[in-house]
Length: 285
Image 1 (tube, rainbow, N blue to C red):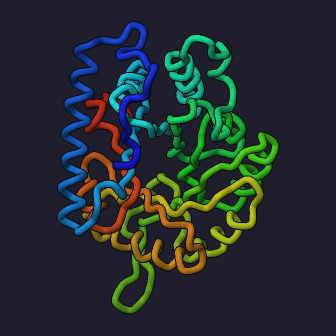
Image 2: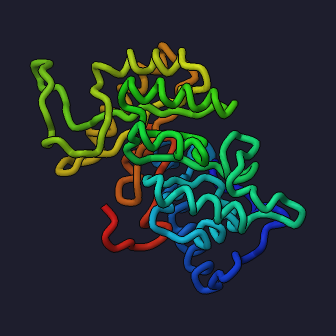
């Protein structure tokens, strides 16, 4: 499974101050979630090795990230810059090996962001333009580009930092076509962001042409109050249309702890898993 690798050589088995019991719990949860993904993939006639597990570490401490990393997880996601920046810096310091620059937590790694050569960070929250510079200090991917004004800002900042940023276009699944072809809302404004499907082609072209940005595919969250599978089926149709004009944009970032099976059935390639890996997080929106 992409996103999981053999534990990297030279890393500590437990982060400084880490709890062996917590590491055992994370290992157990990881095994369960990987088995769920494998079963879902086989049921859909897909190879589990073609799926990417992204551990959504929001509100969890840096020690949890490091312990999952020692278990082979390489892909992590955050949705709030004010939490993510300090956490990524701490994780980078905890994973540093003797002889590394102690300021590495604030420096760009080989991929252009912090985290080291085998650790990738994804930003999955709604992105405000005034937070973009801070996000680019640590994120390798932004999954939530949903308007043209963000594209220019991210491109300029990526060029300034001499790096490439992977982009997913966030698609709103809060509307669908009825039998007469008319688009109607499924739920009221969800506050989750996302581009209208009708505007996606133009947005994709803009990203494709922007220096410093690489268009990877689409991302969406299933609407509240509706079964997830019809929504993910709509996303799959959007993704199939997008890849006709942008053949490299093959990523479908969809599926979370409660709906990963139907996301896999509808073609998801990147699964954003939080609660099932880390446990319940009270008060998290």
